[in-house]
Image: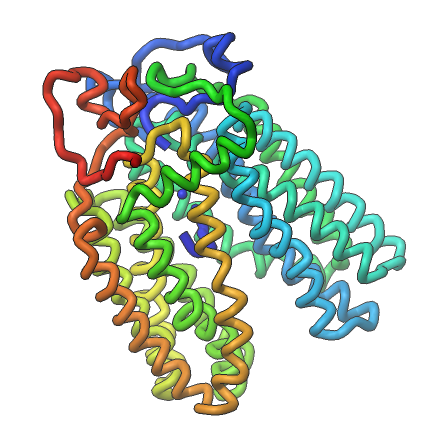
Length: 475
């Protein structure tokens, strides 16, 4: 969740890609069992993360994240150079975020009906063209805000089509779904660290247009990796999508609300976005810069990114039986970050808290993504992930918008202290819901029985031996 993250986060062998693929059987011929494919179709396959195809997807995600972290620097530097203010920079960023948040749920329906791989390639190519046009505008010195906003909106729509398919691709490529999510989290965290610094160097020694060229290049390379990618055949239990678009949208919502652990986390996360993450991002930046200068803020931001790498490494090794319980406990660590700034700690202490906070939120992200990908049937996973992304993003702008008025009324330091306390409250709320704290891990994705009921991966091979997974069946 969270963003960002990320990561943002299906299941057993392969989700259904729609009627056209059902008739063909798959996008690629079945290569058969074996660790080289890493397909989690049954217990006889070895638990594997790395394979040729997962490596291609890993590189594609790392490159895309690298480009995304470079974009804010390019927009800020480019627009400010041509006489626009901070408000214009925010508008340009919102032009991309708004369409993405509004359309990602519909993107989930599309991803469940058609080939996710082809949709992701198409989305990358659209963004490649859009960023190339933006680069041409900046190189020509013809920078008009509404044109930049239109380009951002196109990117947002393409992202809404791309993002839902990410969730269903991971379990199709790796038997060790948690390990795969941990590896991707590490790559995205490393990109988060390198992207802004690289963009800053390019702006200093070249121009903002050069950053847009580099950003377009990341989409080109991502599309190439996805083009070379081979996905295994559709899961035997996946159901074809013969109903209309609206019926699929309704079914996705029904599947979402039938799982208490799923919608419960999203509801709590909305509170987290408003009371913790939303205010923390802008207020930490302003308070640290005001007290210690921009270099100190850069150091603290890097420490936070380093912590997310640590959290991803821990998630590669630690395999808790109740993943959301472990993730919620790890999320407690984030409280020290806003609280340390609000309490007026020195740069070294805040940086240390940032490392701890980054590790906690990164570990939570891997636990959450893996839980969704292994507890939800593949034929609805993209839609479920889309609801997850939409719910996670919806309240973040609200929290950011309220940060300023709250700081004016209470003082920024007090708001940050409250954010630290609310972080603890949110974790306590997650742990107080039995469906969340008692959800039992599943090491492979679920499939569908002939009657349409979700079946855990072990039961898909041995249906006569049911196993408790902690997941609630759809209503």
